[in-house]
Length: 492
Image (cartoon, rainbow, N blue to C red; front, side, top):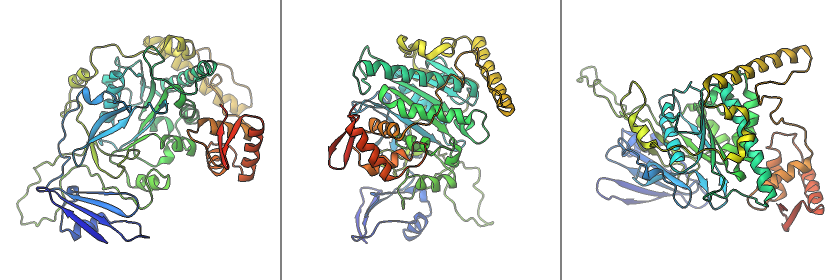
């Protein structure tokens, strides 16, 4: 192993490289021991995933304090990105809200344990959505306690699982309505242009409450979120989940759902031990990579004799907002979200957060999609009427469970869109599954790539031979094209 040392001021930077044929790995505790450093929060390690690593040693944790966010930080740049925080070296940490190069709406996944700063991180993104003219629908499943300032600053805000399901049903219907309109116009992607359809995001805060084992609407919620992830990208409809950093199995039990979300903007705040193992297993973090643990505070561990003076009254800075942007260009670089709102607890709404939202009206859903959004959207500002819809949905779900147990058909809800009205998973032909994979792909695919995507769509597993046969039939029927030898694309 070779090393290059740079020392600008009080900061020391080591660049390490292993010989060809070796893959670099490290043990943070052993590294700190070798460097005679008893405070691991002063050390930042980044690797290129292959042979090289950069170790930066600071005199104190560089992220102990960060500045407050400004409205200017949250205005999208030409690449559709906003500044959400700073990395340990002071450079801006950016998150993408939209990809103008492909016309793709984004998928968002935000993980964090209790007290890790998940709600403030989400608040920052919701403020950015309002400032950039994005239609925001928010289901705050902590009964509205996580992001209370968002109510009135987004197009639609709900607090209950029933409200979240009605919201997701409406969003799926809008995505399908946009697909029909865009198809009729010959459009294959979303265009973010003045006067056109607005970019539209659905956010589910405390998504565990909707998707965990035993949740009453788990299967339906998983299906609807999966549909948005599949169909929304090309029509400007994004989906984001904020959840406790527990085992990923609690996210609906759906490999397809997790696979789609991990291709989007994935942020990991303070996590659980099981989460790290699952991130590697699911491919969110390359094998062999290690992230520095984010503790509850920045106070270093130290052995203290019973004869030493007691300094336990001295509080150390917390780690709220510290995170890794796993989908960004520097997934192993520790960053911290810019401060949003008051540091101290407040008895009511935070005036600093309200000031960031501003007094302007939030962007509203395009009128042409109101019919598709249905009664739930039309009654969103009438609490009593909307609660009646939620009660009717709960009653129908209870009735459906009882009737299913008795072997009879269930009745349709009079309250608007319910599970009988929602799109249902159904058996489809392999040709249709292959065609859907090719249509969703941004680049030509090999038969092996198509096989992997088809076997990840939640349907019956198939073989490579079956996929090759299906591809040949689609090419013959002009539903797909063979771009070059071994590469296939949708004929669109």
